[in-house]
Amino acid sequence: MARTAASVKKRRYKLYYRAADTFGSAQYADLSSYNTFLDTFTDAGYCRAGLGFTTEKGDVEECDDGTEIVMGFNGNFEAEFLQTTVADYTALEALEGVSTDFLLVPTGTETLHAICIPAATPYLGEEVASGSTEVIKIMYSKTNLAAKSDFRTRFTIPTS
Image (cartoon, rainbow, N blue to C red):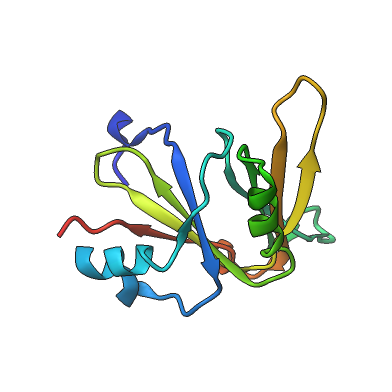
């Protein structure tokens, strides 16, 4: 990997979701298959900036020599929906506890990558306070995965 400031990016993502389905590299092999793949998702609408995920080390074992061995990884996904009509609540509540694929697609124009969080089983939270923007939070966590790729898949969006 070459050291280059050109690869330092601040990206904004748009969120899409669908009922969990088969997911694999053939679905984004070329622009036509990617567009067909994207058409299987629903646009989530407006979300608060900062939607996304983190991966962190999971269980750690301390060895007799003082070193630590990371036994797995934890993944956490969260999005805050700003559209909060009754219909929005109803549509999102239908996802709670249901295996769902989430797709984060960058909004920039350069060649970028998308990120899929497949077969997530989300739960919802609500944030309502007088004088503040109402929020529907959708969250998903998975613990002690063997690899970060067990939580998410990154892929380059094809241009042709």
